Image 1 (tube, rainbow, N blue to C red):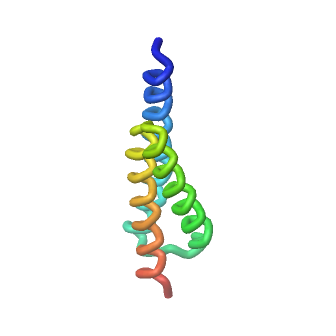
Image 2 (image 1 turned 90 degrees about the vertical axis):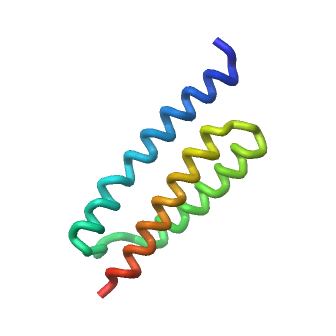
Image 3 (image 1 turned 45 degrees about the vertical axis):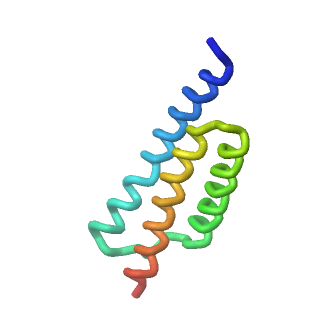
Length: 88
């Protein structure tokens, strides 16, 4: 198996799993309109990490890093927005 292909496959699997980890949190905040207990700072740090991984993916040509982390950064933006929207 080609090394680049293996990297893309592993990256795609990681992307799908990473995407799935945030779905329950986004769903819960949207459904309950309650964001108590969520640490915005951890989501902001994770968003910065995601942006750095997008940059690494772009510079190395690993598109699964770019796509996967773009989706995750978008999810983090949604969560951060919802936290501030539903803050009481």
